[in-house]
Length: 111
Image (cartoon, rainbow, N blue to C red; front, side):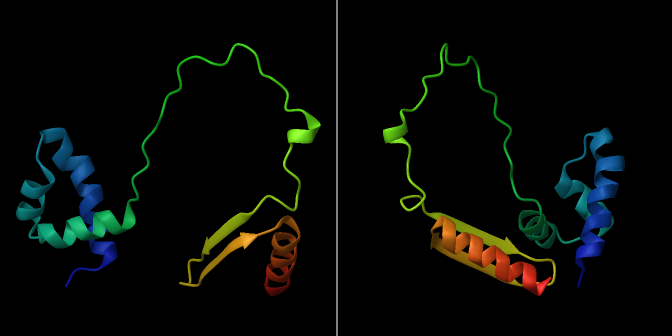
């Protein structure tokens, strides 16, 4: 059974030794004796995909929002998700500004 640390080392070795020699990750894993399916699962679980974007052009003029169209604090709702390194997962939805502020104050008390 391979640990996350083993897969991390394998990924580092692949980037430094396999990639420059145009080896696929499958070929590299087979040479290293690492199960490809377990490596792929580890990679998907630990490397979240973030795709860079590029915006071409910009609006010519920025129209100011009239004061009567600005949403009030009461109408704005927020969601917060916190995932800590020790495995604690906190998720709160449908928070108003005041309830979000109270939530953060309670979290500050725990720290």
